[in-house]
View (tube, one colour):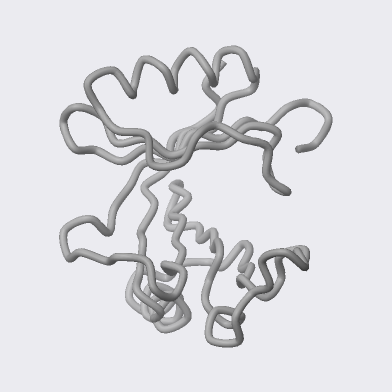
Length: 143
């Protein structure tokens, strides 16, 4: 079952500034902010110093809508016009796989579905219309 769908803004290192801006401009309530420095450390892929303060994920409440945002990782390509993606949260991993596979038909996989520290199954895909989707699974186990 699809649990929710959110607009997701992708910024280029100015995520903290954007959070403050949307708090002021839209009266947004900051629900959660995680930086790349908050991620569990992986000795094989240490987080570079210039990434540690960038936003990994922020959730803001604007009226009745959740607005999510993150910064790009340093060195990743960033193109004006591609800053908005759609984040979809699904309750079952099999349904997440099915939706992901349908979205990728005639599209492009940006990140294969995989387990992350925040989701048992997460991936990114650009559909045939050029819309980028972040497919995430949230199970009853609290993941």
